[in-house]
Image (cartoon, rainbow, N blue to C red; front, side):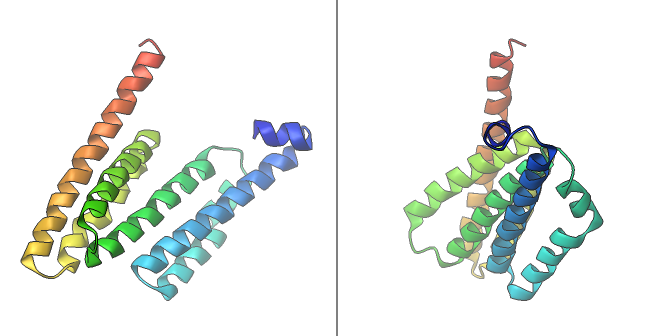
Length: 168
C-alpha cells in the first residue's frame, strides 16, 4: 500500500482498489484450487459466493489486512489441491516428499499469520480415503503426519523468531 500511495498519490481510492484487486486474486486462486479438487461447478459456486456475499463485499471496500491474508490462504490452498492430485498419481516419490515438506512449512506460516490456516489440514485428513489401496492409504497417512509435524515446527519456529526479534 505504501508503494502504491507513493506512485499514485495519497488518495483513499488507491487503498480501495488494492483491496478489490486482492479480493479478485483470492477468488481466482480459490476457483482454481477448488476446480482442481472437485470440479467446475463447485468452483463456480464458491467464486460466486466469494464475489457476492455481503461479508466479502464489505471486506473488499474496507482497509484491512484480511484480503492480503486471504490471498496467502488461497495460494496455499491451490498448492494443497495440486498436492492432493499429485499424491493420487505419485509418479515421483522423492519429489512428493519435498513437496510434502514445503507444503508443511507453508501451512505452518499460514497458521502463524492467522489460526484459520489450520483449516488447510482438513483436506489432508481425507486424502487416505481417496487413494484406494491400503499401502497408498498408509503412505498418505505418513505424509499427513510429516506435514503435521513440519507445520507445527514451522509455526513454533516463527513464534520463536518473532520473540527473538521483539526481545520478548
